[in-house]
Amino acid sequence: MSAPVAFYAPLKAPGHTNPSGDRLLARLLMSALQEAGFDVRLASTLRSRDANGDPERQQRMAQLGEHLAARLIRHWQQQQWRPRLWFTYHLYYKAPDWIGPAVCRQLGIPYVCAEASWTASRAQGRWALSHQSVGDALHLAQRIFTLNPTDIDGLQDCLGPNAPIVSLAPFIDLDAQPSACIDKTALARRWQLDPNKPWLISVAMMRPGDKLASYRLLAASLGQLHSDAQLLIVGDGSARDEVLAAFGPQNTSGQQARVRFLGRLLPAELTPLLGAADLMVWPAVNEAFGMALLEAQAQGLPVIAGNERGVATVVHHNLTGQLVAPRDPGALARALDQALAQPELRQQWRDASLASIRQRHSLEAAAAVLRTELEALVHV
Image 1 (tube, helix red, strand yellow):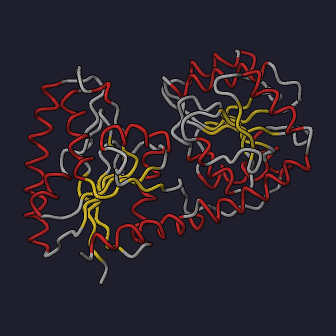
Image 2 (image 1 turned 180 degrees about the horizontal axis):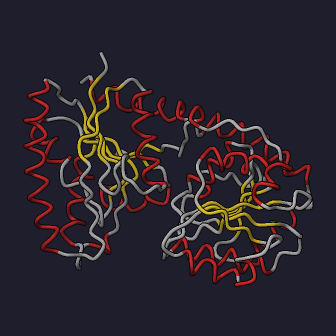
Image 3 (image 1 turned 90 degrees about the horizontal axis):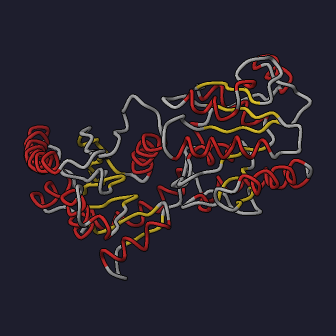
């Protein structure tokens, strides 16, 4: 019989209406847990994120968490279902888990989390209560899966060198990737592109903050690019006008513009473009790791990206692409020019990308890690 597991994503539930890397990874973790042989149920869709740091709201959320924990347990008792483990994905000082620790204390079951972050500098100020809640949850955790190695130092600052940290490589479900017949000429007609020029592609939401900063760096890099390449931008969002402005008004109209804004695409529309493009490019400002970078490599598309935070966990330097100095548009442009001038190198990167995804970044690989680490906890 499959061991029951309660799953929760306090930042963004797997069924949230807005697509993002957080939502995708929450869904993937549930799938990986199921692949590992667990009976996974979504415990709650409560979004705990406190963007502004409101201590009164945090106090109310703490009380709500205790209430929801008791209600969940009653509900499960009525359904004759009892989790053997609680699994929380992505908690940090702005989005703590107010529910899971209370459930674990009441039921006496293990608490596990993935992609948690902690920094001592948040102990004071507007998020102090949320920060304390994250620390309390981490002290309760029997496994902490890290997808971004830059989180490890903070976790060890909180818990000490013997923190129960387990590395889990970011991953995708290869079976869920749409298959595509690559016809560059047909794609060029559909999207009004030049099939005789190299295609660069970037895939990211257009929102203020780090994403907008990345787009602005991308525009600066394009201005220094010597290759006559076209840039395909896939994405949309509240900062669309600012993104368009970064690339210049001449690029927002015209059939032969160097930059083509394709908007938000369905996976079946995006996949053929990834297969036909020559390189994916992304400055990756403050990027945790970048699910879009993994999806590109799943189609054999090499990546050139800024070397920030956990990007090196998904783009393997000089194997599946290249990492460049962070926030350096000149370095990004030079790397693109050099790679576009070497088709044999790009083919090597293509082959290595496909192999790397299968071996290191597949749902099955993640499920194997989860199974190994969690079976001992649920069968105690």
